[in-house]
Image 1 (cartoon, rainbow, N blue to C red):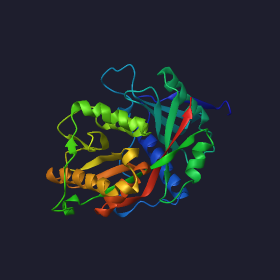
Image 2: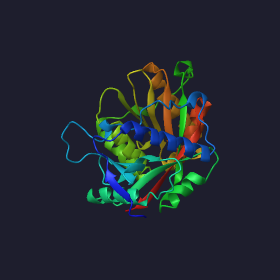
Image 3: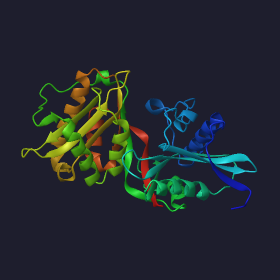
Image 4: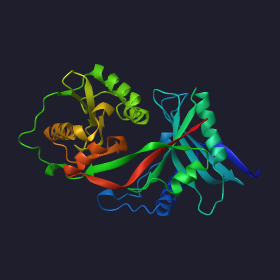
Length: 317
C-alpha cells in the first residue's frame, strides 16, 4: 500500500457523525450487492446511530476498553474505518463496524492487521466478522469479500425470526409443561458450557454480552429428558417496552432430529407461554441454522423469517 496511507486509532475529537454515515453507506452498498431488501416487519431505520464516541471513549477511566476503532487515512482524510470488540470473558474479538468511502479502492488489510494486533495483545488468536446472506444462499459476493482477506466461513448461519405483535399468539389449551423448568443461577454456567460444547461458542459469547448482569428481567428455561439431563435451553431478556429481541432456543444434538420434533415444538410453545405470562408485546430471535427444527417450530407458531441471514467468519491472528 502506498505510503500516503496511514492507520490510526479513533480520537475523541473525530467526526463520529461522518463515521456513522460511512458505516451506513457501506451497509447499504453491501446489501445491494447481495440483493438484500429489508422491508415490512424487517425495515431498517437508517437514521439510527450505530457508531458513536461513547462506544469507544468511556468515562469510567478504563485502561482496557472492549471496543476499539481504527481509521485508514489518505492525505489526512479518512477513507475507511474498522472497529473491533473484544469478548467479555475470552481473548478474541469481532469486527463489527466497517465503513469505506464510496469510490475508494483501498485494501482493508492494514485495518485488519491493527485489529489483529489488538487481539494479540489481549492474548487472543482469532478475529471474527459477519457476512449477510439471503435465504437459500450458501455463498455470495459479501462472503467472497471477507474470504479474500483470509477469513473462513463457519458451517452454520444465524437467522432472524420475529413476531412483532406477540399479543396475537395464544398457547394451546392442552399444552404439557412437564420437564420444562426454570434454570437456576448454577444452571446458567452449564448452559454456556453446553452451547460451547455443541459448537455455538459465538452464541455463548453473545449471551455473556446480553446477560452480563443477572436481573429479574433475564429468563432462562431448560428442557430435561426423563433422565434429568438437559436436552434444550431457552433464554431471553424482557426489555423496558415489554418485548424481547434476545430470545434464544438451543436443542442439544442428541435431541435435535426429526424424531424429536414434537418435543422441540412443545418446548418452543412452553417458552412462548412463559413470555405470554409476562405480557410481552413482541419477540425476536437470532437462531442458528443448527436449530432448524426450532426455527420451523417458531414459524409454525406464526413467527416470520427475516429476508436475511448472518454467517460468521474467522481468521487466525
